[in-house]
Image (cartoon, rainbow, N blue to C red; front, side, top):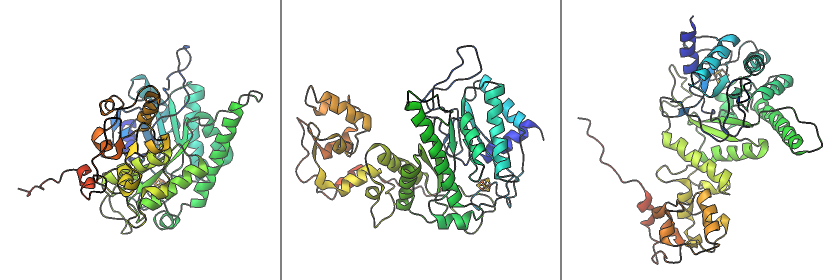
Amino acid sequence: MDLQRKLEILADAAKYDASCASSGTEQRDSSDGKGIGSTAPGMGICHSYAPDGRCISLLKILLTNACNYDCLYCVNRASSNVPRARFTTDEVVKLTLDFYRRNYIEGLFLSSGIIRNADYTMEQVVSVARQLREAHHFRGYIHLKTIPEADDALIAEAGKYADRLSINIEVPEEKSLALLAPEKDVRAIRRTMGRLRLRLDEAQEAGKSATKAKPPRFAPAGQSTQMIVGADTADDKTILNTSANLYGSYQLRRVYYSAFSPIPDASRALPLLAPPLIREHRLYQADWLMRFYGFDAREIVEDAAGMLPLDIDPKLAWALRHRDRFPLDVNRASREELLRVPGFGAKAVDRIIAVRRVTSIRVADLARLRIIRNKALPFIVLSDHRPPPHLLDSAGLAERFKPKATQLGFGF
Ligand code: SF4
């Protein structure tokens, strides 16, 4: 099979993995004339898009789409009737360097189906990164998927070469994993996340210490995971609780949410339809509330519903459920309180705190502070604004924020 055909198969096979944003690593470049490539911390790399509009920022491929496992939600499962291919290590290295030189990509995201066993597969994945870094001095971004049961020495080596490592938790609940991916073991996944966390902590601690020798490099962009949304019956509350637990236990940089895509010849255990993409978007918004806005997972989704509303964002939904906390005086409120105002981003809150030290904030300042005025005004008091009495109590307030209903077509 020629390289072009392999690339078609193995790039297509990798498109379902959403956990490939390339942020948060150390800065490297090759301006000293040695090596090839560079990284730019915090910069999103967006060169191409998946069919559903998701950004694919790296050369994102599988080493092989052959797999011993039979995870029902996966197009590459052993029983799937898809063409199979396998790259050699040299082929992936060549593709990465060629694409990099042509400016198509800024790094590599490499995953693989499980062939022979976990150690063999992990060794194959690591050997690509080893060759790129050591033989070709490649300094671009590398994200490697980690095989949960792989030997510790292989994981240490993966962390030496990769910027980020990830292990997919796949679904939020253990019982769903047992049903949908019977060969996968949630305890092995969590154990390996724990091993990664220990190594990341060690590298960080040693990096802070002035007395200790320079620590061995270990995945400076940390670890991440992906959860498939809508392949099982787990509600948003369960998903967010699982994410909160993963962030707390393993210091993950990111949990990626990937809306389940129906696959050909799917098992009857899977839903026939994909969940709405907006559900994935709302989960990302809720995830940001947990990571940057001081919200607890339990506050974000109402107990009874279990699901995030799709028509309004989760912070606005929270504010509408807690109207007794508003209106909030922007010129006096604490940072924690300001972070909970609809339409206020974390940077806008920092700007408010800086500006109000010298002058009181008025309606005209909102645009300059990059605040979504219409969303915020019913919830705030400014030196020249107070929402009309009863607005916050009115039943119609929520309706103001919902998208306008549109007439559906008649199909002719
Ligand atoms: S281990 Fe499961 S999810 Fe991963 S490639 Fe194999 S079948 Fe797909």
